[in-house]
Image 1 (cartoon, rainbow, N blue to C red):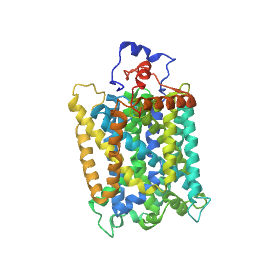
Image 2 (cartoon, rainbow, N blue to C red):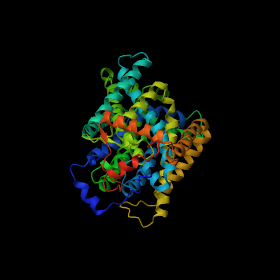
Image 3 (cartoon, rainbow, N blue to C red):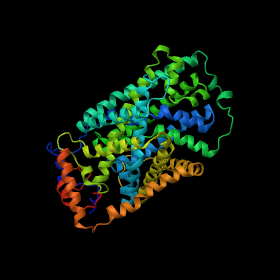
Image 4 (cartoon, one colour):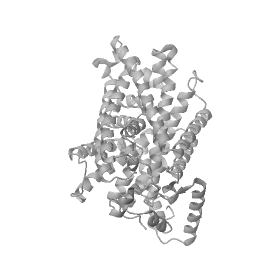
Amino acid sequence: MDPGPIGCATEGQKEKKSDPDRVTLKKEIGLLSACTIIIGNIIGSGIFISPKGVLEHSGSVGLALLVWLLGGCIAALGSLCYAELGVTIPKSGGDYSYVTEIFGGLMGFLLLWSAVLIMYPTTLAVIALTFSSYILQPVFPNCVPPYMATRMLSATCLLLLTWVNCFSVRMATRIQDIFTVGKLMALGLIIMVGLVQIYNGKYEALTPQVAFSMDRTPSVGQMALAFLQASFAFSGWNFLNYVTEEVVEPRRNLPRAIYISIPLVTFVYTLTNIAYFSSMSPVELLSSNAVAVTFGEKLLGMFSILMPISVALSTFGGINGYLFTSSRLCFSGAREGHLPSLLAMIHYKSRTPIPALLVCCAATIIILCIGETHNLINYVSFINYLSYGVTIAGLLYYRWKKPNLYRPIKVSLVVPVCYLLFWVLLLGFSLHSEPMVCGVGLVIMLTGVPVYFLGVHWKQKPKCIYSFIERVTLVGQRLCFVVFPQFDPIDVTTLSERTESSSRLSPLS
């Protein structure tokens, strides 16, 4: 049984909104926290990993800087479209919720499947490994930190932040606020040192003659891969849409946070790369496994220890932000009946989605144990862009399908059309240049088709399956002290209706 339409409420439900005894997700994300969620999720490990990949594929300093600047512009176009979707369909879950609402269950499930199975666990694993590598860099200054040490430290960090997110939404958002300020200060230090270098005349790599000189002319496919590398660093610009229901006055604060955060991050990223190139030759940057550490060793002398510490703090905040938002994706998927119903439950006191957080943490630790994840950046970026394109195409379809629907924000059609044109070109050339990487991504998404029809669409299953799921759910509830939340007025289904229907949902529910 489907959870029912979402988007309207009766007068009686509106009156219940202020009931202090209702068990609901807390609205504790104001404008400042909304900005730090976006900035904190974007600025994670990408700016310390991707510069090498962007330069390698683009072939020159000048083209690399152009890629970073255009990457921010593309993220800004996408974020404007998501601002419209976020206030028109005010549900947590981001891409998944919008695609499910517009295109139906199968399309939404495929996005959810790829995100939960590989996209977010892999991204979290990359950020956690970056955190552990930079933390251990001072301990192992002349060699790569041991494999087991980086994995254990990464897993410890994940477990600690999972506990924090399970304990309190307020504590998680405060950590995000503090570490976002910290990572901006770290990047500010890099930018200031770089600007001092430029002021002192050390900007050979940035002069037009040198910046655009190259040993080889990059193909269009190579430039597409450079954009994919940059997109990994910008990924997270849409994450506030995953927690819309916890934002105070989302129709006002969601677009404001986007308008503040995306230009700020683009400005900081571009200046950070200029700072890198003011102090490091392209050869030095390409040979470095830790760009910020190499930068610090060259310019900060005895204070070079600040660089690995700053990067570690930055990635620590990134892990917290990804856990916070990706767990809400699991929560939204379970609420729609596409994942086990246990994942749609929240702690009866702290109001946090503990089962969803535990699943996100476990999936990331599994990815950590599988092996090296840094080579999956192109692959994760491909799935990211695929999700973005489908979602923004949904915006155009929704405009045509429901032209009279009230939209508090309505962007010009030029914005989604320009984004989709870029999206088609990027994915097309990426498929041409890296057919294996992109093909594997598509295959993983399509494996969700039989899972959807067997687990969600097929309703008449043996009673023993439902009995088993019910027993597992009850055990999970007792272990985590979780209950079904009472939904805000945007959701028609009440707690009693949700509980009544849960026994008839699919095995994935």
